[in-house]
Length: 295
Image 1 (cartoon, rainbow, N blue to C red):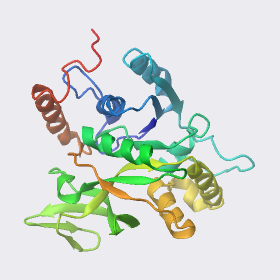
Image 2: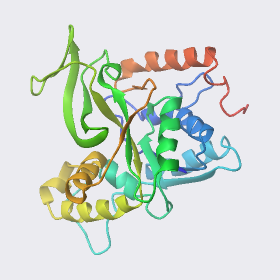
Image 3: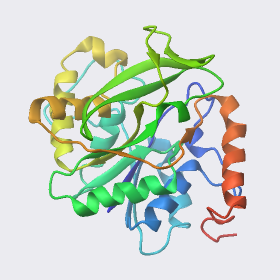
C-alpha cells in the first residue's frame, strides 16, 4: 500500500514552510507521524511531493529514518509539468494545486493509494481505517477518511473546510466553506452566514484513491490550461476532481470516520498547540520519544 504526502505548499498564513517545521519531541516533522502510523498498518511505499529545491533535502531526511523495507520516492511538483500537447504563456508563480500534486506521482504509483496533507496530524486509527478500505475493496477503490467539524477548528482565526454531504455512508458532495469559525456557541461560515452544529463530517484531505484518478486529473488540467484567467492564479483542487468523478462517473466514495483527533498548523499561533499535543502523546506512549531511533 502506498501513502502519498502533499508537501509543496507555501504556508502563507503560517509564515514559513510548515511541513518542514520540527514540531515533534525529537524534532520530527508532522509528516513523520503520518508515515510512522502508515507503516504501523502495513503501508510499504511512501511518496512525497514537494518543491523542487526541497527534493534532495527531504529525500535525505526521510531515507535515513525509514526502515529499509520501505520504498521512498520524493518528487518535485513543478509548474512546467503539464500534459503532453498542452502549453501556457501566462505567467504562473505558485503550484497548480493539490490535484496537480497528486498527478505528479502518476509514474511511481500503480495501485490504490492514500493521499493527505504533509502538514497535518491525522491520528493512528485514521490509517488503520484507510488500510481497511484499501485491503477489502476491489479495483477502482476510493474512500474518504472524515473528521468531526468541531474538532478541526482553530482558536486563532477562521478555517476552510470541506463539509460532507453523505447518503447511507456514501459521499455525494463536498461543500467548501472558506471562513468557518466559532462564534460563542455557534460555528458560522462568515462568507455565507450559514450555521453548523459542529457535528458535521468534514474532509481534511485524507483520501483513498485508485490510479484511474490520474487520467481524470489530466483531462481536467487540460481544460484548465485553456482558460488564461485560471492560469494566472487559480488551482486544480483534488476534492473538485473527486466531486467530478462522483457526478459524471457515478463513483462510490465511502466515508469512514477517522476515529482520531486531527490538528494542523494554519497560523503561527497554532505551533505551540501542536508541539504540546505531540509531547503529550509521546508522554502517554502513543508514540516513542524517538520515532526512528536515530541519534
